[in-house]
Length: 226
View 1 (cartoon, rainbow, N blue to C red):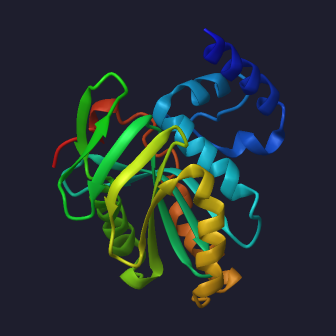
View 2 (view 1 turned 180 degrees about the vertical axis):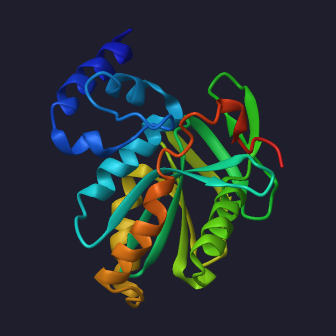
């Protein structure tokens, strides 16, 4: 009950800030005053929103695109929670707003979430899922794979153990490390896009934000098992 009250109060306070209304939910509606509490209390959307909120503070020339829905060849849609276009590349985020302890590695099909009471849950490798998102973006934009960076971001309530990642373009972390890691990466990487090119890429992807409106939830790919 205390946690619920906290989130509701937080929802009211943050909802009064105008810049937050630019974050759209998966159904294409604005996360404004009425829908904001739903955004915070929905586990997946809440994680994406918190990442969006952190990245937005980094400012221009970065461009953020939440909730992209890209069409697949079989008529279904793939949902990408959040993309950031920056001078140093295109950053694709997979948010996991989990608690407990998570173990996994880059090459395993499934990762394991262990809860305090001993329950264990397997879930599809989020690195693989994000790689499929990057592949779709690469084909859509006609941009080389080297331009893309994959960030898998877990809740600060989650403990990451036995996490093995070797690919240089892949990062797995808790949310409280996100901005520090991106700033560090950007400082070490060369610029590959000009502000004009950032705007051009944004314009190509913007029509896909909230594009799932009216297609029916059954057509949205959840990618639980692949």
